[in-house]
Each structure stands twice: as structure tokens, then as C-alpha cells.
Amino acid sequence: MTTIAERLESALPVIAAGADAADADAKFPTSSIEALAGTGLLGLTLPPTAGGLGASPSELVDTLATVAGECGSTSMIYLMHLSAAMVLAAAPPADGGSVLADLARGDKLATLAFSEKGSRSHFWAPVSRAVRTGSGVHIDAHKSWVTSASEADLYVVSTLAPDASGPNESNLYLVDRVGTGISVAARFDGLGMRANDSAPVDLSVDVADSARLGDDAAGFGLMMEVVLPWFSLGNAAVTLGLARSAIERAIGHVSGAKLEHLDSSLADLPTIRAYVAKAWADLVAHEAMLRETARSVEQPGDGTVLAVLATKAACNEAALRVTETALRVTGGAGFSKQVGIDRPYRDARAGFVMAPTSDALFDFAGRALCGMDLF
Image (cartoon, rainbow, N blue to C red):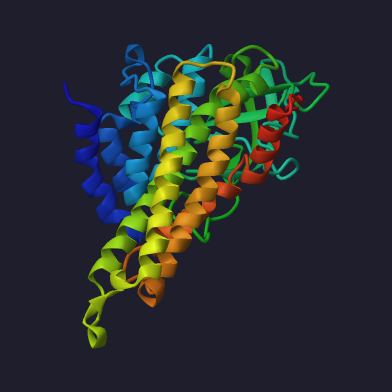
């Protein structure tokens, strides 16, 4: 039986080979996603009964961190696919049929369509509202950030339930991207994660009740109980994978770069060594935190929600510090792309502004610590 590590080893060369060009051109890394699909890794966390690999949260974070070390954009596309897939596994639509098998085989790529301008990074609170029709609902929504917007086959779309009386009474629907009433409003051209095709999407679609995930007004629960833990773990893993890539490349540079007039290397400077050591300690401490939180998600307890909230925020912030140090110690060589830290440096800056943002999560974690309601 082929292990997850063996499958990943097969896909990584393809992912690495296309990463720089995809970043430079802000072009979706089709070959990388096909490589993941071809090895069965797009079904990483889906249950074996659906054709997936049944990977645990711990295996998820290891896999995503490794992919991120080669290409941040590919890892984010991959994470969004897995997050959407896990919602569908938890609450499959009535007419879903073989959709989980399609996702596991890599025949279809999925993503989340949650964030809206009216509620911004509070992804769990859509302002759009489904309107009842004879056979289902009509959805008019402007989604401000949808990863794989032009490339995904399936969107998991959030909207207020037709009879909602508050922002937490929402529904999730499975919507086919290819069809009338869906348009990608712009092409993504960002600072980092440039190849992930994250773009605004306008929807004006009729959706059957059978495409709803879970019971009526159950969307908020699915977002909190399924999406939040899987996405937060994965996002933290992506940012730490980027940080590890940056600091390892920086260490390689300072160990080899020469000060010929002094017959020494950059690593002979005590200040450089101290910066590197502090960044390394920061990285491995947060990798340990992430592994512990993954284990907590596998065996939930009273502290699991707090751990999930704090881990994404803390790991995102650590990635900022570690990649900043990587740039500091490599100086002009790092700034000029010579060392190869520029892409992970830029990509790592996506995590802390990605909903839920670090600031929002630290606030929620503080509420949990102080015994206050989160919402």
C-alpha cells in the first residue's frame, strides 16, 4: 500500500518545478494540482468509504506544510479543496451522489465561497440571504474572496437562511461553478499567494433544496464545527511550511556566503547566528504547538476550541517573524531573489490577514480564556 509520504514524494517535484513561474505570472498551478490528484492526495482527509485516504489532522498538517515548502499557492488551493470536501463529508447534499468520490479521485476541485464585503473577515456571518422559490432558493451574493475562483468545479456557498432572524442562521449550498449566474469579477494580482486564483465572485443562481448541506439554518454550525478546525489547522501548517522553507534557505546562504577580505562566512558573525537560532526556536516551538492542537482535534476535549483559535493566530504571527529574520540575515541576496526566500516571505503574509484574521482570533481566544461567549 502506498503511504501518504510516498504519494507526496511523487508529487513534490512537479509542484516545485512550476512554483516560480506560477508566482511570477499569477497563473493557476494546474500541473501541481494534477500531480496531487494523480497521487490520490486530493482525497487526503476524506473517508476510505468515499475513496479517500482517511488521513488524520496530524497527517493533514504534515502534508500541507510540506507542499507549502515548495509552493504556497498550491498549498492554499489544496487546503481550500480539503476544507470544502470535509464539509461535504460531514453533511452531504441530498443529491450529492458520487460527489465525494469525484473529489477524492481528483476528478473535481472544490473550494469555499464564504467571505462577503458586508461582513469582511467574519466569514461565518454572510449578509446575502437565500430567497425561497418553488423548487428551492435563489441566491444573490457577492463573494469577496474565493480561492480557485475560475478553476474550481464546485463552490460551497454560504448565505443567510430564508427565514433567518440573525447573522448566525445561515445555510451552506453546493453550487456548480459552470453554469449561468456565476461570474468571476476580477483576476487576482496580489503581494503573495499569487497563483491561487483568489478573486471576487458574483452569484445569482437558483439552487435546489437538495443541494443544501445539512438541516435548514445549520450553516453556522458546520462552519464552526467542521470548517474552522480543519481550515485553521491547515492554514497554520501552510504558514509554518513557508517559514521553514525560508529559514532553511537563509541558513544555507549564511553558512556558505563568504566575506573574502576577512576569510570568513556570514555565519561567523555572532549576530547572524543569534538571529538564526532565535528564528529556529520560534519555528519549532510553533510546529510543536500545531502538532499538539492537531492531536487535540483528533481527540477533542474542553480545550480544543481554544487551541484551534490560538494556534492559527500564533502560527501565522510566528511565520511573519521567521520569514522577516530570513530576509534580515540574507540581506540584499535575499531581497534580490538570489536565495529563494522572496516567495515564501511574501506568501507567509497571507495567513494573518486570512479570515479569521490573527487579531480576530486572539480576541476570540481571549474571550474563551476569560469565560466569555465567543458570539
